[in-house]
Image (cartoon, rainbow, N blue to C red; front, side, top):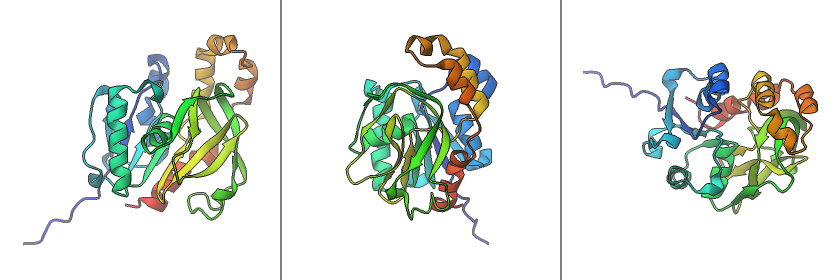
Length: 245
């Protein structure tokens, strides 16, 4: 009898929240958008809605984990979020490759000894410029990328203090910690590789009155929204480099 060949372990998506129902109906939830950015087929992914109380399996059941953005705030210390932070610590100790986006970026920092809070520079939205820092030199995830590139932003909180021993790989005008590497194979971005320009324009239109009340130039931000092909390939590059099938 021939032994069965084990299937490739899936990539986990830790789903931490969604846009409002109107935007979700148009563009999909945050897990769907991150799944598209991964380039993986549905049968290569396992989505676990931790914000709805679902729990992932043990870290060794996955070949990598991706953590979505969320309208929630890490500093609220919601039970589901703290349970997920504990899982992230376990996964980091086990050596699991991970990539966090926005809330996922902040939750990884919080879980692994950093500090998260409201950005003293204010809310950062729209298409903004990311600048690679010297620590990015030689990192295989970022090899060949230009020194600056546009990326989609949508956040009020940020990583105020990266975890001990981490490397800050990129910054923007309003955020010194736009991209972080923790250890060898844990990466996170405050910006959104998974967002397309149409989603960002629709978000600005839907929440423009709120942002205008914060003295943001919503027409200017909307006019500046554009495609972000460099940042948009980072999730695929991460999986190819650190968690190949």
